[in-house]
Image (cartoon, rainbow, N blue to C red; front, side, top):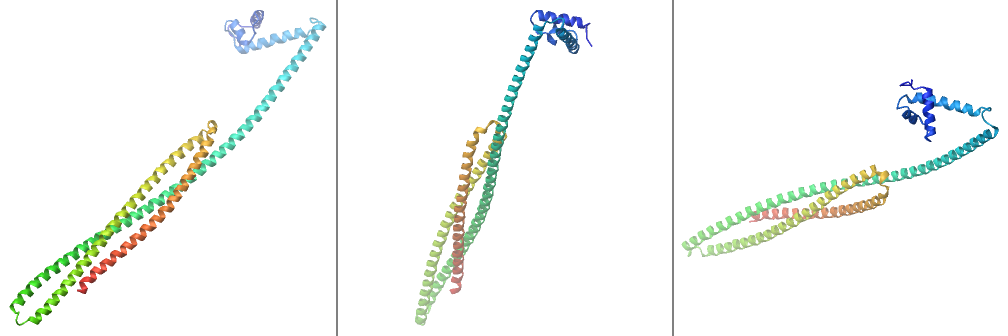
Length: 333
């Protein structure tokens, strides 16, 4: 319903005014001409009625001559042909754009599939690296346990050595007392016990020979313990090297994790960063190279661990052998 008394006559007058000024008699222009009154639907309805009446007047044969009718017909035909040509051209352009966009979408889908596969491969490689790191940590823990066991064995040997040293000192003290008593006895019964004195001297020499032999054995055992200490120091140095290698593996793990996060962000922004595919391929090659280095290090670490285990076993056998010899020495005396 029209507002402010707008009617068909006012709309017609406003339209004629706009046409006379050379302006387009649109709904908004007519509404402004009417002082911004009246609804657009009402103005549109009045305009349609006015245009239908004007068209009816143009079709009236009484008002138009034959040349004008023919001119209007030719103009209408030309307008129809131009409109159809414009429509055909627009449809052709639209079809070409659709085909181009379809091909572009297929290319992007293919690139996205490639990126997803690359991302999956890198994630798999990261999982493999984590498994290798876990195995390295287990090996490191086993080496630490063996080192602790070797340290305990060394401590026991030191205690046993101290005990044997105390026994030797006690034997020397007893021997000194025996020698003093023997000297006193020899002086008191020198004339009567010359033969016993010679036997005693022979026995004394034998005891001194045994003491010298014990001292030599003790010196050899002390040298063996010194060598064991050196070997334990070397084993500790090798263990420190393995710990440094494990720390390096952890750093590589953090680097791989950061790289994985970066690749996740790149996958989320695929539509705007397809030009970075080459960089991602280079990074994949670096990860493969890193994986090969990790495998090589794992093999070297396995060989080193085997050598350490063999050396520890040999040292343990040597220590046990020394213990048996020290236990057998007092029994022989």
